[in-house]
Image (cartoon, rainbow, N blue to C red; front, side, top):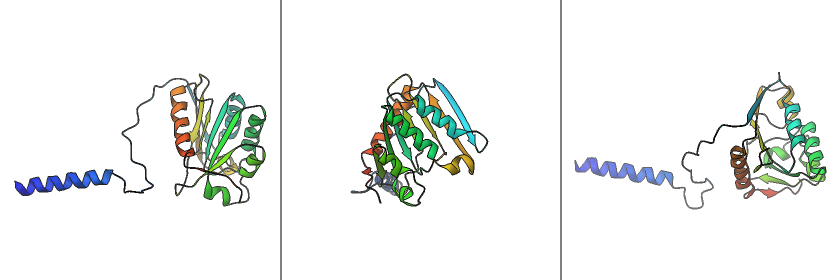
Length: 195
């Protein structure tokens, strides 16, 4: 009995230690299961290469009135870059956060064009791969929208790859959750300073 209790105590101590990140660890402590959010609004989906997901995303960017928060793994789409630049020019607060390695890995990145147009860009450097593909439009409003899925902001995502994209509209709770996550990542990102 004593051995069983000692074994159980050791097992509990090991489990507790496994849940606490090491001092100075870059891995954040896990939160409990995130809450379920109410289903409301509309959901629009597209699957490439069959559907024109890029046009669907451009249309959503054009509808944004106040703010667009972007998280990008790879950003090479001229159409999406042009739509974000046009949004910036009409007074929408556009902010982009991109994966550092992908931003500098090829000549076709549109990030320099966004910066040149006055769009603030930060680079995620904390993670091995900042693999989010998210746009949050007008969080905190009834017209909020979130774009997410496997679809990178690239020419290949539309024309060469099998991808999915989902636009969730008119659900402020979901938009607020994505915006809060964007801000959490932004706190660790570094300003883009060119190559």
